[in-house]
Image (cartoon, rainbow, N blue to C red; front, side, top):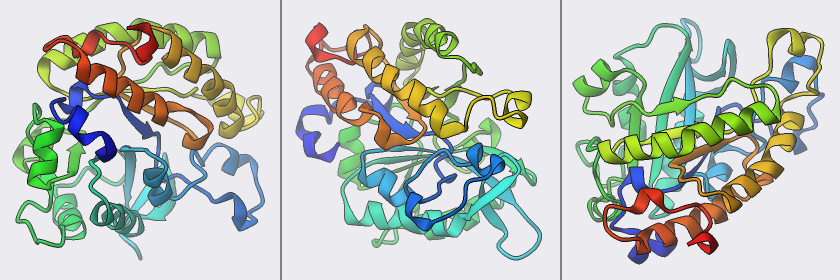
Length: 296
């Protein structure tokens, strides 16, 4: 996004189309030679490291944290399954932010193992503090902040925590609403996304709050046990080729769109084109402009 900074610096986070990844820490690299099992088919939602997800254009990370009493205390989880140490992921994020001028949203949205803990912030901030040792660790908490203000302040880490009381106490960005269809078929997911795009765009743009459309299928427990879906990658293949067309051809106005297997979508270039179009829109009307600038 920094490449088009001069065009989009007046947009707020809620007015921006932000590409993201679902369960960002649940990744496995395809070149590691791991043997796929029934469990692994439904654990891994990405095939790139978090650093590579960011390098490929993802700017919203959906993070699910597990807290354990032994060994590494904090992990990135997919439900009850621990996948990668949180420290490794935070190192990748800091590496990217320090090497670029990009803005990154970290949504600590779920805590499937262990209690939601106020002790997470003292752990996070030292890892995220930028090289200037800013006392707020580069974290921003103002809902209506513009992209230009984020760049000017160099506080480019937007840290959100899915608990309003804790967010307020520790000056995090307000909780980000994730909109889940909880659908396991493509027609159901399409219908759900069609129903939420205009409504939630209007509501959240007015409030200056970020919201996320979770654009993936959700397998049912019995379907997983019977392997009816063939795994999350196969489910993503069904969705992603259609999602690109929906975003390109419909008058949708997404904010964050979080996907599985980011590189199998065109969500990043679509977001860039949409944001350039939104920046040209009349003041106060950014939300009504579609993803596809050809529709203007």
